[in-house]
Image (tube, rainbow, N blue to C red):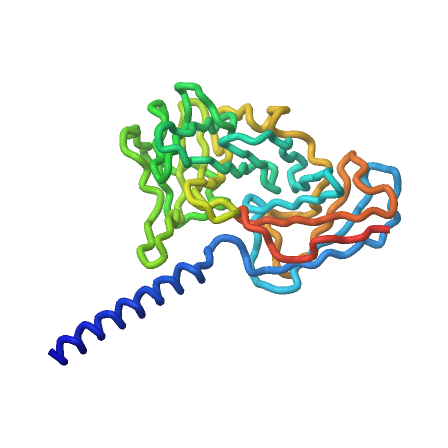
Length: 306
C-alpha cells in the first residue's frame, strides 16, 4: 500500500512539475520577429524654417547588430494627432478606417504589410494583391479563416525556400502550380508553447497578369491575439499593379529617409528630412516610432527640435 502511495505521489509531482514547466515556456515565450537593436535620435544641426525641405533629425543604433531591411521597416513621426510616415522611396500610406484588412506601405516604398483579421469561423476574409486591400470580388487572391489560407481559383503559385524576401528580385525558371483546392501549408505548430509559427519561405503568386512575392510573418496581433495574420507582399513582375498609384492607399511621403541602399546598418546614421511638406517650422516636439517586421523597435520616443 505504501508503495502505491509513493507511486501516486511521484506521478502527482511529475504532473505538477510538467505543468509548471509548460506554463513557464508559454509565459516567457518571445517571438523571433523584430530586433534587439535599440536606436537613439539626435537633432540635426540645421535651422528650422517654414520651408518644406528642412532636415529634421538623425537616427542611429546604440546597440544591436541586426541589419534592418527597409522592406520590413517603418519610420513614423507624429505631433499631436498628425502622423507622418517617412520612406526611402518617397511614397507612404494613407491613413485607413478600421476594417478586416489593414494595409501599410513599408519604408522601401514598394512593400506592403497587410494585417488580416481571420477570426471569423463562418466567413473568409478575402484580399486582392493587385489592390493590396480586402475584396469581395470572385477574382480574389487569397482568403483567410483561422489558420486556413486558400488561394483564389485563378491564381498559380510557387514556394521559394532558402531565399530572403528582399533578395528575391527575379522570377525563377520553375513551373508554377495551379493547385488551389488545398489550403496553404504555411506554418508549423509548436506543441511546447502552443504557438503558430509561419515558415521562413517566400511565395510567388501569379494572377495571370502580375506576379507578386509574399511572406507570412505572424499569426498574432500586437495584443498577442491569435487569428490575425500579418504578411508582406510586393509586385515582382508582369503588369504594374494599381495599389502603388491608388490615392486612397498611397500618397507622396511627407518625409524622406536619406539612405543610399536598402539596409539600415548597425554602424549607419540615417537622416530624416521634409519632402515638400512643412512638418516642423520652429520649436516642435516630435514622437518617433520605428517598427521592424511589424514589431516596435526600442529607442528614443520623443525629441524636442528648436
